[in-house]
Image (cartoon, rainbow over all chains, first blue to last red; front, side, top):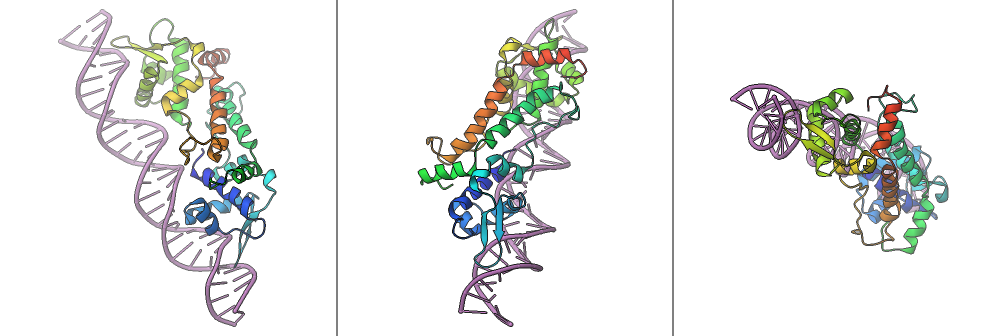
Length: 137
Length: 137
DNA sequence: TCCATATCCGATCATCTCACTCAGATAACC
DNA sequence: GGTTATCTGAGTGAGATGATCGGATATGGA
């Protein structure tokens, strides 16, 4: 549900938002700063681009920049781009019945998670990172 | 994080709360009613007992009864008994720093999940199940 | 135009977790 | 003592996860 994909992904997007204002940020630069495996990061960045979060600049001096303003990208977008829609339980009732327990319990949980993640923007994380430079993200 | 352990576990506890008032409920009875693999259920029920949610009655005509009143058992208790404490990300800062991003984002997520799960009691689920007898749980 | 630098894309791989089974030990009621 | 249960731990197959590699494509600069 929340794996390293999400964690690395959030780190990567925050890194681009921080350092990608003047020129594109290469995967290698992200990997170096965030201490993440470069080859693995490479395959996380594809979905982020397809989700319209990052934009790529190919060729020499290329890399990634934000496709949207950092304050318009939520943590939920990053997570769902990388892991698919939040899904706790695949309901036995097929999703049609509002009285099904899986709805009343697990869907409530999914909603709570989505709300919490949607409440945090990349811009906020960048701001926090700026105020505390010891942390890599 | 939330696997079949949690789902089966909640189903099992709700089943015991529903049917375990007069006499203990055997694992086989739970497995039959909830259509769950009996041998697998058997190993979920151990942690639930150790967590003080269920109480076992050994021997012939034995089984499980609630160790606490159903309205004093939350879904969070069941989930953490079976999957351990909710933990999204193991923080690189060791948990000491309140400014760490992992705290501000992933811990917020964990808190939201815990709150949502702690808000639902087994008794509520039993009540819902009674009002909609078509559902197995 | 050539070359270094990057993104892109797919295949592959090791490792781990998950869901589940099995075998046997212990306990209690008839 | 036999039957019915809980208890316990070890084991297993499939699939997900985390990561690597090779090569194709694109681009700016010499």
